[in-house]
Length: 444
Image (cartoon, rainbow, N blue to C red; front, side, top):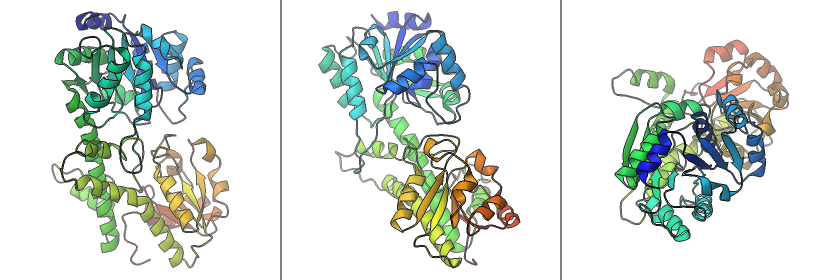
């Protein structure tokens, strides 16, 4: 099948789609294409997840507006079916790959899931198939890894026997459908003709700009945009530390800085988590690993942001000491374990880093999170026996929390706020001592 023929099948919704990886990215993508009228086959290696999806049940516990209803609708309509069997992809005209692409302890890409998906897909690849990688990858991964594996196993040549593209996702838990529909996408094709057909494909579900480009540019754009965010957050976090030392309030400073045109100081916070920002800057940096290009800013930003849970532990230790409480054998309530508000996603959770650091200091943790199943339950019951509470995630449930009741449940009315959720006035009215990230505690 030629690219013009594939484009015609896309426009008439007769192209059959496959989606490898039914997680936070692949599942909503598959559901949206099914909603648009395509027949979609979803592949996942977890049988339990596949069974849930085929029952029309959403396997994501966070607050995802519209996704549960959409999934149920497209499964019941018969347009989306999940399976663990890669052989079912042989009938597909287009396959999208959305699997995890983590890094190791040395910040090197770990493509085990991607390689496995490519190897299994290669055996089912047929002439005229379009393969699009949506996973975030280091620049030049499409040419150095994806293309060789598919060509070797299939015996076909990219650009002739099959077509290759990269359209990196731009989604955030809690906004999956909204992001997929309304955020612009970079559409990278091995050839301009491939990128054009890909744009036709994504136009079926995306109501924003689709910028056609080459593979390397698409790889660079995605990793660069998340590295940019990481650097900006690191700057905000360092300003927060300076404000604490200088006797200032970073939240007031940020407000006034951002009144100046073309200034956009990001939010400081207790840590940066998720699957993207902690690793994508390293994927960008990895593309220069074989050269002598000096890299200073990206590693420095990563170091600042990774240090923030440790700084929250420092704030807690200082607060306990100044309250006359021993830090050894203390017990604290950690509010929030997901990396993001209204989500159950715990990947690279700053709270996990905090709990580990507290344990190293001899401080035990009781954990609460309304979306993470091991930690759900009554907040005040979890607070019993704790000397203090540490707010790590801005879940809506915590904004509604009765601080007075929390103060009464703790053995000492002490609260460390790592996300600027509570005001000093609220704390004073509740009779709870508040230590906030980015605010001076020189007089405490």
